[in-house]
Image (cartoon, rainbow, N blue to C red; front, side):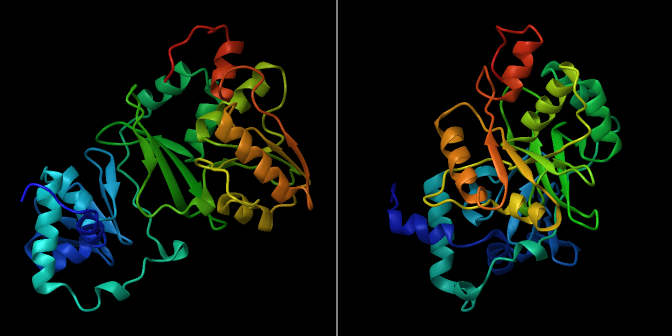
Length: 311
């Protein structure tokens, strides 16, 4: 059989990796700590909160199917057949009743730190980000360089200063990026100032740091306001406030919100939707970058890099 149906693919994707290994390859499971596992063959794979993440390649997922394809290197059709073939015989009776952990119960899996942040610093400097802002983020454990692939990691904390979110970005042109396993977007990357009543909202951490750099470049005080990134945006069918922003606004005394999303269709739609959701309680303005697609583009333009290679 050299093909599979959509129904078979859907059925295979239902099974998470931990359930698969427990039922069919228990010898592969190595318990690292309470609720966290690695695999005997691939020790850089960590499994927690219903997800798996492979630090050696900055890849992750939920389903056993993704694991078999990305980590074991099994062809797609064969992987689907492998899961469904075993599944027919011994599918766990309780499988369909399993629930994903709630965000507040997730354990964040942070990749190991490199001995220095030299490559991450060089990368941010190449994007035009100001050295003072880079050093501030490193000193306050908001960013660091990870091993083994030397990615740039952005961290978000809860009210007790416990890391609850981490997004990673490759330091090369391949645009490898994503959220670390166990991340809760309610606590996305941010730079906040106690007592500040003005909040700047961005799509990404790089745009946030770029805007702060622009403020300094233009002679302003980048430290007086608060900044938060959404770790990506979308335009919902009705105006809603994303989890990351809603969580922050619960405790902060914010009066004015400035939205700095990208200069594209998605950014424009998301800006308008977010403004509509906020305008009944806050003073809201939309400020996309005057030039370029995003605020990192605009920063580099202002620094004289009008013809730069897109990252």
